[in-house]
Amino acid sequence: MAKLNIEQVDVSGKKVLVRVDFNVPMNAEGAITDDRRIRMSLPTIQHILSNSGSVILMSHLGRPEAVGYEEKFSLAPVAKALEGLLERSVAFPSQDCTDDTAAQAAASLAPGDVMLLDNLRFHQDETGNKPEFAARLASYADVFCNDAFGTAHRAHASMVGVPAAMAGKPCAAGFLMTQEIRYLADALESPDRPFVAILGGSKVSDKLDAITNLLQKVDRLIIGGAMAYTILHTMGREIANSLFEKDQVESAKRIVELAAQCPSDLFLPKDHVCARELSDLSPIRVFDDHIEAGWMGLDIGPKTQGLFDTKIAGARTIVWNGPVGVFELGPFEVGTEVIAKAVARETAAGAISILGGGDTSAAAEKFELTDKYTHISTGGGACLRMLEGKPLPGVDALNDAS
Image (tube, rainbow, N blue to C red):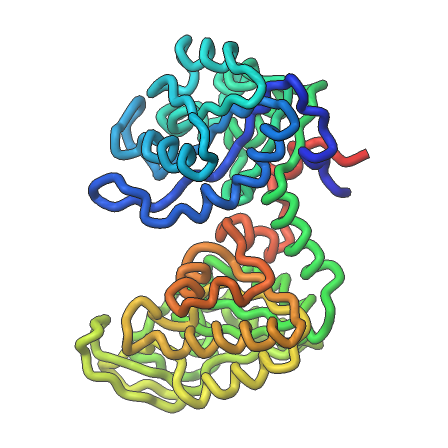
């Protein structure tokens, strides 16, 4: 069932507690290097403000090791960046999201005001989903809005504890959350066909459930990246020093068996761009099928690039999660670039294309193609969980639309 959207809630004169995903990358000097996640939250924030509500934002940033404030994980730089984007003041009252100063600042908000709480993960109670912590946050507001798709797969206090503590009050999805769910759900439940999924990345163990689920839904499943080598090994291919998960051999065998039983077609690399070490200065060789001893596969080869391009051609729905090579290094970027351009080409021809977050988004940005796709997800982990066919705790905790 569809979830209540913030657009359906009367926020006039109300304080709205919005869970956003401001887990943005920063450099050693504490400057934000990519503000996309902040920009993606703006429609929800601006909607509340334009309808005479006030906004209390909360997010995590990184993974603080200590309990309590750590300057390098503070959201203070985000508050400054948000002020520039909103062109209005953003209060940042305290280094502790639950102290009296934060509570008093929330209580004093007037319609049109915005404040940002500091890092939720300065408290272990956030990841531990402690009811007392959630109740303290919930006491700040009249309405809860979750716009943090990137953490929707985590049953943390700000995702599930707060809406539970706000029972009887509106708990709605923001515009970004609604958009993410709609695109991914539609792709998986009622795709235009042919439906092509592309999975890459380093470990098959990370995407085993997604492979199993997608094999029963797609017309064509393309697997590349280091994760392919465990599967190829079980099929009798020599993979030499390529990444190999010994404990996933039986799982890889089941994938091959399932693929043989499913109507979908499975495509794996047929040749490989290899090096003796992971370096952009290392000499490279291309091997067909079997990789010689001492070498490791770091990108799909020319034959595979052509094959994958052909299998993407004509698709009407495309889901892509994970690069097919070590695209960060020049000698091993070509395969991922071929995929990126093929998906962009089909999008221009009318296909719906959905990219998983994380490395897939980074690849699209590297190749300057971010505006060429239907949707780029802000959440790699949450996107993957949906591809696995599993529920998202942060979504399930929201009110259903009437």
